[in-house]
Image (cartoon, rainbow, N blue to C red; front, side, top):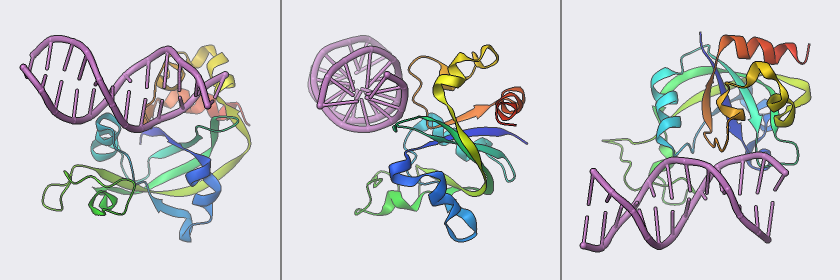
Length: 153
DNA sequence: GCCAACGTTGGC
DNA sequence: GCCAACGTTGGC
């Protein structure tokens, strides 16, 4: 089993929105970056654990946990001219973008802020705290996962 | 709202 | 295949 971190803007889709979906489940559409897509398409597997991260907000940070409940399939929002994520180069015959489904697991009692994460010697290798990293889907090592969990328990 | 850090596009 | 121009992300 692998571990991941997914970023989302809470004003668009926050962890409470995920919790409130039917079965707490939603497809993770709109990823339009090749590196992030490759992680989702090739490496995210059923049952993988996901940190849910709030970006572009007052206190950016990790706010809870979800899990992968469906492995990659084409992101159909790319076919919809009305969608913000429309991409005419992605077709049903030859889809360019993919997504997974994730399901709500838990919301933390507090935000583990980016500031706090940056201050941890144990997390200096994490892509998230690296300079200028804007990837919206990134792997988390088992050690990093367990260490971050230990911050709230 | 500013802007640094990237990623993508397209002319050549 | 280089690289300038442009667009986007996301912390601050």
